[in-house]
Image (tube, rainbow, N blue to C red):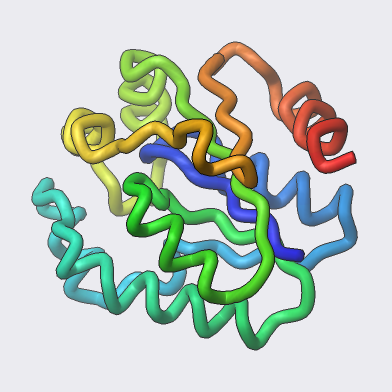
Length: 160
């Protein structure tokens, strides 16, 4: 079974994902590394992605998961359709990290060397479709005040 750590930019997906991969002895896949160059250029210039831009990226992530043994993937997976597409790679569980938008803006502004500017935080939250009860394979963590250790512990308890 794969784990997907999802959420808007600066939610802590990569940090939590790496820690979960270590705790569960799974390979970590950084979703940002699989964006086509045009997506990175678009986001770097402050323009949000559309679903048409996301499609080749999601296809690459599905292929990566399908080829991998059990893995942990960091990926925004903001819409239900994105999450459903990732589910085609095989059994997975999704952890959706959703900090307060102000906290995400603060984190994004403080990052160095990342292509996603803080200006795009708002577009991420406007794209976000919160998972509902019809996505029982998804755990939503809305609090941004949990540290990484607490977050990983919560996820591990949820996974059983």
